[in-house]
Length: 79
Image 1 (cartoon, rainbow, N blue to C red):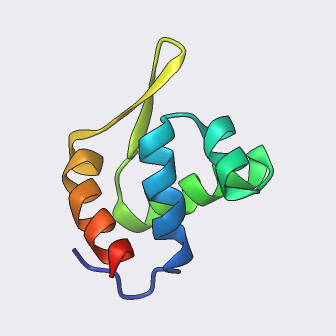
Image 2: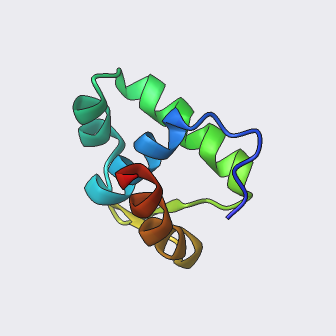
């Protein structure tokens, strides 16, 4: 996974967004406003060139690319 140029704080946001599958709940856990969490998701989408989380009905589901990133993100954050 390439991380050059990524604000590593965004990895924390991505990890929580993937866990919660909700921008609102992720924002609460991150102690951010919902618009700030949404902006973080936007920056992550731009960086990875992938939607990462897509709306399916009323729920967000991770893309296959996001699912492939998740274990590596957890490993990086645990170090």
